[in-house]
Image (cartoon, rainbow, N blue to C red; front, side, top):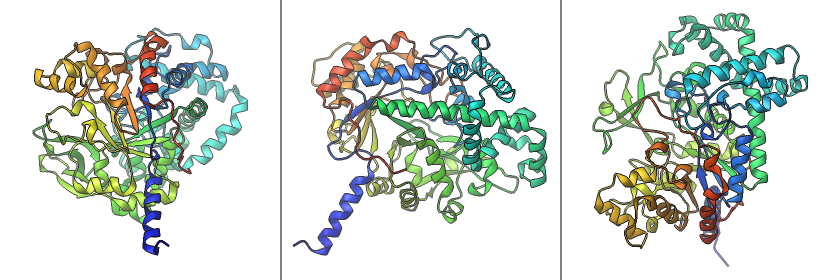
Length: 529
């Protein structure tokens, strides 16, 4: 008979194992493609018919996962990692085709000429905003009457964040400001009389924002349901920090380390490293974790619930900051003067597990990973991230080498921040190229073969989940780059064309997925949300 201690230890191991979204022995694969990069007729990918076709393509190729980038309304630089809200969705993703079906738009309203391969935000943003104004006008005039009960229920159930967000967006439009810190002081401080006056003055503008969020939520909900019916699960992305210019900071100043003028006392970043001698200064405000703890981390849990309404698993960006984050004093010219400040650690994840019923997370644990970060990952069985492009420095203990993976891992050929694998390989010195072919156990090949070799290495690795950007599957070079970190403009514009998603481009991946025992595997553990 086992002792009580042995039984307790077994139960602890079972509980720990159940925390991971990937059960023991699980093997699956998927593709990384942001929603804005999907083919669509209106200048930017959306959650319309093109998304259903994309899910069909994943299903037919045996892929169990689709990973996108953050889905919030973008601000500075059109970056999905600089959102105006942690709770709202990006209105640019609303499908005009489905609004035509709802009777809120007509075909003639949607005329426009757009590039099929590049997003021109200077054209797309005013175009989509005009369509949403037309849809609101029709709705206000009585079109889509059957939507009214669902719209009212949506506004009521999301009021905790939607009221502040809708007013925030209406005020941004009124003042034509780049930041709410440029508004009148009484609105920056959220004096009740000033907020009431603003709501009274901007009712239509506020309701237009509410309607856009309702319409997007309705369309996105159907996408998740369709994906599930096709045995495809969705991975979302949660930035660790939020933008200074956001309804999050404006509506919840007590949750951030701000001064009396509501300006940040510290800014987020990372210390000097191989990539930057002065470190990186991101400009985000940092959290007041004591204030979060007093609420039982309610805001953070609500933020995660909002995203889980549309995805199945969340990639936690900059995971190391849950253990400790780099705080730089406001006004510093570079990140060099910062210091590590402890994060919420296990306390937050225990609270989230209690509130959510599970921890459906993947950790982006790249960069400087210290023992406290590793301990946090191990304690909660959160799968870590490995990137094959980082594996070829010649060190046998490099964590990105497949032989060093644990099963509870997600491996990528590259990410949205990397060069495409073809571009990356073209820039490698000969010694590192030889290491790639050596790991692939084959004679030296052509540049055009590098991406497929890295995909093969990822798919045949011990990692529970293997993911490649669509650009690597298509063997694209520099023309497929999505983002160059540190470059303020010109990012997030790449789009796939319909031709790129033809079945023939996925047959090789389907065959590899079958051979590597990853064919459309669905996780048995679904978080009880």
